[in-house]
Image (cartoon, rainbow, N blue to C red):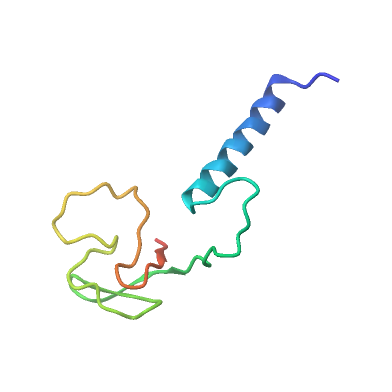
Length: 92
């Protein structure tokens, strides 16, 4: 049975995506996930001008922007955003 080129490319893309996601958490195909922590998501709550609070740990960002970077720092905002205190992944 022959498979179409598009079908094979889709399977390869799905495999590569799965491997990349596992690599992101430090695991490989077939490894047990017993020690993987649950990912906590949160969002920034604006408290006052220039200050944001994490909705998970409720700690002040201490002059960080809503992306979790020091105010005025030129950064690539396409990186994952995390709370600097509890490590929660920040949703926009």
